[in-house]
Image (cartoon, rainbow, N blue to C red; front, top):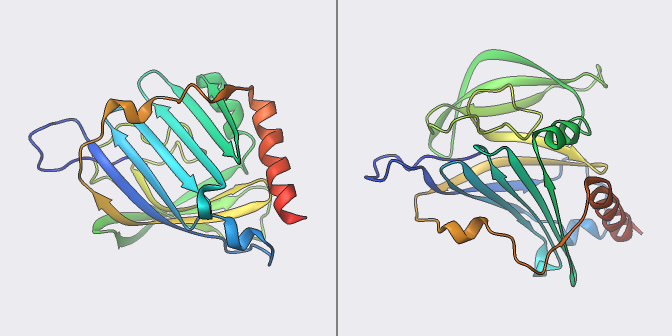
Amino acid sequence: MFLSNCGSKDSTPHGVIVYNVSYPVLEHSILENVLPSEMTILYKGDMARGQLRSVGGIVNSEFISNQQKKVFKQLLKSYQDYYVCELNQDGVDQFIQTFPSLRFEPTEETIVVAGYNCEVTLAYNDANSEAAPMRVYHTKELQITNPNWYTQFNSIDGVLMGYELEQFGMTMRLEAKEVLERPVEDAAFLVDPKYVSVNSQEMETKFEHLISEFND
């Protein structure tokens, strides 16, 4: 999910992509009032930082990806608590297995999203054969190498511009609404020292507890 800075004298892609976030099957709860409605991704070369912030900044969920080094960091800020989980390629592979297994079917359909020509691929959930397929929009116009390496969409060639994520009992629909070309400092990909390192199981438990807390 990273973008190129087309036309810039600097050949390193850098900028930001902004996604609308919606929750197609979310039941009425307090979650509707605190869940983020927007996701931003800062990118520069092989680095990217995704940011999902709740209303009022009560809860922030972020990730930092280094495609070249194959390092993925997941960050969670919950009230006054800060946690970070770092994964290598093996850890990423295990993380991907926690998501529903998807089977992809290319189509001849195309669509323009945020000004970019996108291919449309249908993604079928292997665990639910009766469910309608997810429509995945992806573009090759953004010249990023292996942008989906840390996701269950890693076999799709191109930057994801519209897709769904399912985690912790929630489904999120993300669709790009804006691509901005602007400088991104290297410091954007550093982790604040206040974040406490936890392993993947501990991080999953903290996310699940947080969702359960809001649903109560």
